[in-house]
Structure formats: C-alpha cells, structure tokens
Image: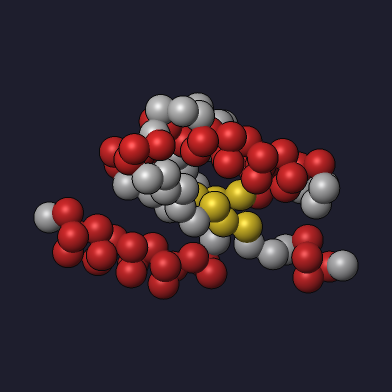
Length: 94
C-alpha cells in the first residue's frame, strides 16, 4: 500500500556474543535481513537506514551501507533517534 512505500526501514543493531564472533554469524544475519528486504518486500537496499558507532561503520560498509554525504539528510522521522543515539554514545563511550 502507499503507506508501506514511504515507511522508514532501519537496521537497528547487530550484536554477537564475543565468544561467537569471527564465525560469520553477524554477516549472515545482515545478509539475510537485506536479502529479505529486497526480495520479499521488493524494496531497494538503499531504503534501509542504519545508525551505528564510528567503530563499526567499516563493518557495515561491507554490506553496501554508505555514509550520508554532507548534502544528504536522514529522514526527518529519524531526528529524535539520532539525537538520543548521539547522547547515549557520548554518555557511554565518552
């Protein structure tokens, strides 16, 4: 429906318990989520947004995520989440 066409899609977080890391679990989760988004929902992968830490940006770029340029703006509906995420990141990570 039309509402579905304008819906915001976000990959919130991928966390793998440290003892299970480097086994491809997180990569497989992201691949399957994105595959489902594109094939089942028939949406462009570019319609998925991600808020993440600077330290994990390169990992997500391997799956096609890109940083927004200075000219690009995230959807207005993400404004509160961006502010909250920035606050929490500063609070927990300095």
